Image 1 (tube, rainbow, N blue to C red):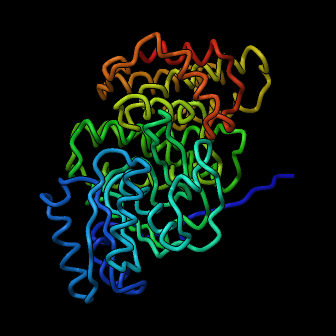
Image 2 (cartoon, helix red, strand yellow; image 1 turned 180 degrees about the horizontal axis):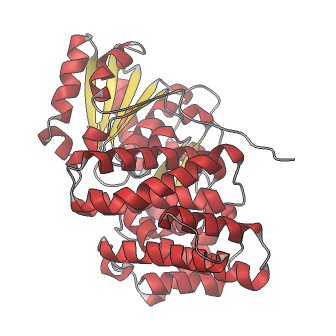
Length: 393
């Protein structure tokens, strides 16, 4: 008998132009907003001006915090101090995963007290959050992480060269406001890396050892959307249909990963992102085809009748748009599709960020402790894990 739990945002609003509802939504929760921004470009793009106009119209005060790069424990603590000092009673995260994760952590800590390290997995005390977070609205401007509907906040700890999560259903945003028009500001290289992160986050949950019926359909739909729209969004950033479908794929990926888990790609992402200045999406993109190939090879060798192989064939069919004559052929063609997509979107090699062969043993050991690794559909040997990194160098 199947058993599962399902979490997602209390309210999801999706569609072009929906961002202009932000003032009314925020006013329903509070009077002073902490706005966590994911990049200076949001100011130059006019998005922040539109936000300010909407908040002014609803008499909502505000203070801003700019996240530079991926959030560290120090980032969270600094933003938290500002929110407390300003007397904020609602939090808005607008940007990519870094801004939204920072906003989620701040919202949780405003009501639960303490520091991020008190609640973090693996590298922190791992205390549970016991109180609902301050109301938080997530507004993604990238189509990648799906952080707007997840129950964790990924945070780096430079001193330990690792990234881990604060995780609680209390961290799920009250509202996920997804307006694909906001993603038009992404340059091609960001479209590529975040889009491949989104693709990873619908593939890994579908083959996860924690896969469940409620996420399976979302995952396959997300794969189909990303397969037909990511390349087009990369080549023509003003293609509205492609941007719409990628925002939807990313949203589906967030729902899937929050409920079915991820796998070895994200198991590696934590230590790699902490040790080197590699954007999260680039890590996922560089590793995805090699992890798919390694998982399939291990399953074929150790458990050739595994139902997970059928799931990999489903993935191949969703990527290609058709099923080939045999299950094996469909699987291999699916892996080739992802390999070619990574190449055509010009994802850099990991060595371009300073990683060398000498770093592999330590990264393998760190990855084995990452929370995402436990959801990988097959236990990969140290040699297989090392080979994945070697191929992505």
